[in-house]
Length: 249
Image 1 (spheres, rainbow, N blue to C red):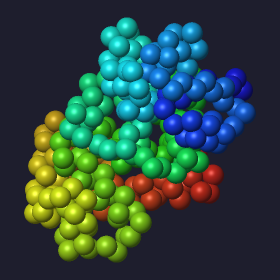
Image 2 (cartoon, rainbow, N blue to C red):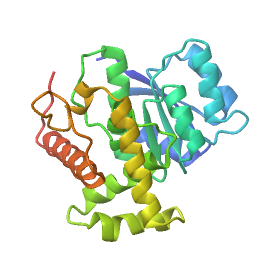
Image 3 (cartoon, helix red, strand yellow):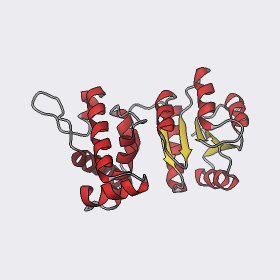
Image 4 (cartoon, rainbow, N blue to C red):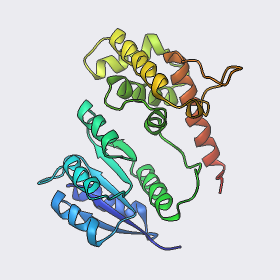
């Protein structure tokens, strides 16, 4: 198998060297600590995937993405950031970011995601079964990533994966609210609104992947609790399949 080329653009020397180590010998990595340097590297290194930090010096990650896409580049991008805002959410949609990872993160898992993106780009295999993230699933269902409900849902699903018996209304919403200096009612409302918008915009065929359709083939709009529980269960099942070595080729 050819070595996958991975361009890591991040100002942290430790992050770059550690991630390159976890990627191993099967990946050829190039490291850039500066936005302009990274932009130049995309032209001569021809990476299969770009790991791009939002807070690069001289040219930030979003500005670099804007230039790349304006030049017609379709390099798969894994964006890393220490925070998530409406601005970042809008850029994720506008510049076709494949995956967003919030720092600090588990580097072995991040390396797995990088390899997934690199292999998919090179081999161009049909819809594989590599584990998706909650954010990727929501984007596939046409959730606007610039809405607060998108961010809140992402956190709720992560909590539900760790604590399947957690009370969504009594424990989960208050935790998310404290993280964002808002109220549990505002969290509930933002999630409900995000689901409403996504359901109206999304494809029925995409929604049927995760939710059982009615007799006429349509999927009823799920409640907040139904959505969180169902997507969590889907992700949990994926993790189980991966643990036993499942992969559809």
